[in-house]
Length: 202
Length: 233
Image 1 (cartoon, rainbow over the protein chains, first blue to last red):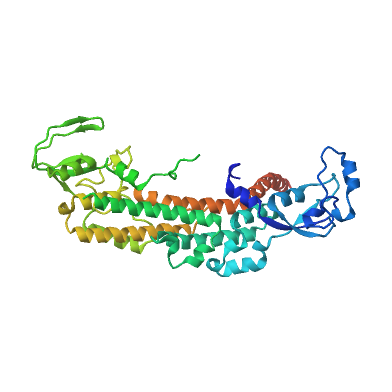
Image 2: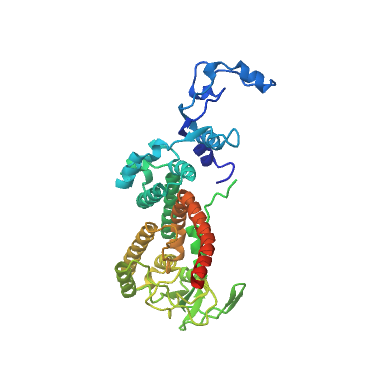
C-alpha cells in the first residue's frame, strides 16, 4: 500500500463493492437504508441499553445484499463474533470484474471504458483480488493493462495530447492509466522542448 | 511535499552530462594549455587535431576559433547501416565495445572522438548528434541527410522501447542494451509507470506464488525423505 496520505488509495477505499450479510445484525439497518434504522449513536450509554432501544427495523437481516465501501466491507468480511462464528458478511465480486466485463476485456482491451466501471479500476480490482485469489482474472487484467499501456504510449507521443483524435479512448482511462499518460506525455514534451531549445540557440 | 521534478534526469541535464564527452577539434588559433578542475586542457596548435571536452569545443566553435571533427558514426553511411540493423532485429544495436583497460563509464570514454568506432552508437549519441548538428552544422558532411537519419533512428528505437513493454511479465525482461542516455530520460516515466502498474495489479498473484513456493519447499524436504525411504527398500 502507498502512503497514508495517498489520495488514490483513499479514493480506492471509498469505492463500493457488493456484499451479502450472513447473520442478523442489530443496529446496522441503516446500511440498507432501512426506514426504522435511524437510531442515535450510543453516547455514554451502556451497550445493553442501546441494543434494547433498537427497533426490529434497525437490524439488518441475513441474506441482505448491500453495496458498502471497500474499507468497510473488507473489515466486515473478516470480522468474526466469536471463535466458532462465521464472518458477518461475504464479499461478492464487484460488477467491474464480473465475467461479462472480463470477456469484453479479453476480446478488446482498448474498447472498454474502464472509468465508467470504476475510477480507480485496477487498484480496486487488485484490492478485491487480494481476498479472492482468482489468478485468471489477474492475468486478464495484466494483459489488458499492457495492451492499453502501449496504446497510451502512442497517444502520449502525440503533441496535441488528449485533444487528438483518440478522445474517446483517453476519456475511458482509469486513474492509474491517466497518471501513466500524464507522465509519458510530460517526458515526451520535455524532450521536444529541449530539441526546440537546442535549435533556437543557433 | 514532493520535488517538482519527476525521478530521473531531464533532457537538459542529460545534455549537460553529455558535454563532458571528448570530441576532436582542429584549432584555427593557438591557445595555451589550461589547468582546469576537470583536468588539463592540452595546448592548441593550429593544424594539429586535439581532443577537447564538448563544452569547450562548442565554445571555440561558436567563436570560430576551431572546427569540430565529427565522430565517424555521425556520417550518412554509418547511420544508414545502423538504421538497417535496427530495422532488421528486434533488439537495439549494440553499444561500442569497451576498450580493454576501461574502468569508466560514458562521458569519460573516447566514443565521440575522430577515432571512435564507426559502426556503433555510443551512450550519448542522440544529444551529442543534436548538439553538433546545430552548433557545427558546417563541419558535418551532408548535415540534412544526417539529421534525417538521426530522426529515423530515434523513431525506430522509441517504437522498440514501447513495444518492449508488451512482453513484460513477472519474471521476463526486456533487453535494453545499447539504449542511449537521452532515450532513457525520455522513456523512464512511461516504462517505470507500466512496471509499477503491473506490480500493483499482479501483487495478489505474486503473493500466492510465493506462498506456494514456500509450501513446495517444505513439501520438497518431505518428498526427499520419502525418496530416501524408497532407496532403502
